[in-house]
Amino acid sequence: MFNFRVFVAVLVLATAVVPRAFADDVPTSFSFHGTGYGHGVGMSQIGARGQALEGDSATAILNYYYKDVVVDPVPDDQILRVNVGHLLTSVSFKTDSKLAHLELYNADMGDSITSLADTSIPTKSSLSFILLGNSAIPSITDAKGKITALAAGSSWTLRWSGTRELAGVDCVLSMKIGSTTAKYRYGQLQIKLVKSALLGYRIEVTNSLRLHDEYLYGIGEMPSSWPAQALQAQAIASRTYALSKVGKIKAACDCDLYSATADQNFVGYSKEIEAKYGVLWKNAVDSTSVDPSHGLAILYNSAPIAAYFFSSSGGQTESGKDAWGSTVPYAVSVPDPWSLMASLNSKYVDWIRPINQTVIANAFGLPDVASLIIVSRHQSGTVAIITATSSLGKSVSLTGETFRSKSKLPSAWFDFETAQISNVVPVPVRTIFHSL
Image (cartoon, rainbow, N blue to C red; front, top):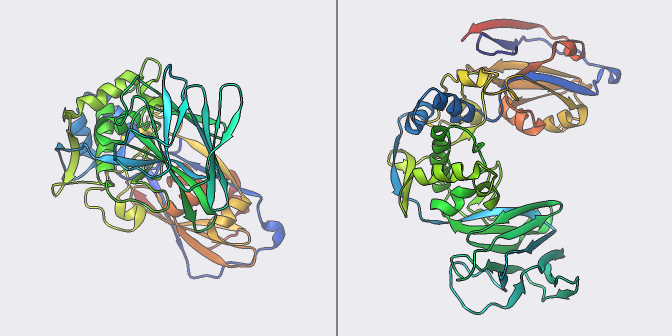
């Protein structure tokens, strides 16, 4: 089995010219063999699961993965603006909750409370937005299929009965993007046109809701069936990460945080209503709260950290400096043996990924790639530098983390498959084996 904890091969390019390859030597794809999933910095979620199964507390798990931190209560009742729809050309909303209705305001209302909406949409009717140039056109489709167009615009607020702003029955809102539907219960939505540098105007949808519970209940970063102490560690890490982003609105998404891996995975009410296990995640969030406006967070020098976390490693987590080139004092490399246990990490303890030529060439900005060579590795076993050479002899180097991200490999703990050696243009190398 692929295991970086035994030996790590560090390949160093000698001072020699790489022979020019012919076009016929350009492979159609490259195949990679690796372990782990994610950037490797901070808390390993598989490691948290393993430690919880061994009886460690949530606080002990967090102190293991983050250096020189304390876990203490902090205020966490801030309102977050979470992007739930990015770079859209269309989106639709509906509620099937009995007696419920949607309230549409022709402006970004923020947290202001008003009793007069511009448009009321009854249950079973849907509200759609379609991009048209530098504006969007909303329309209502009733239960019988009749469509009523509303005035075009660029900014709206959508509220529904059962939110903070409106009294009434409990209501769940469905948002449909393409064939994907997500459910939301808390807060309100903002629909706004934002100009993208590459695509022009696009629709951005954000969910404004309270961090303390409404946001955390919807975090979909860890299976709710996992041990309670692992879930609590995740809840504290997710709260802390969100606190580090509060008030830093990103113009590109009109948000504090994205709802995907650019920040952390937020799936709304869909997480809370998971069959059988949803209540376990909600209980984990509640157990890390100390009162209605304070919750446990990870602090370094008395401030919430950017609590990075990831799925699994190659047996040793990555330091922030090695992954991203800048020192993160609380993000150091520590042993993570749980990630190498097939019983805990069956999906990513050992993986193989073929990547086609076009993806590899685009990653390096080359017309084609005739050969790849791993130049060096970090102490954790991740690829530090990987170099590609085109059929015309031009070479470009990337960090392992950048290459992983551009090529969509699961992690930077990878090597080439043995069967692929013939695809590599020979270069003189010196192989040094470094025992971990």
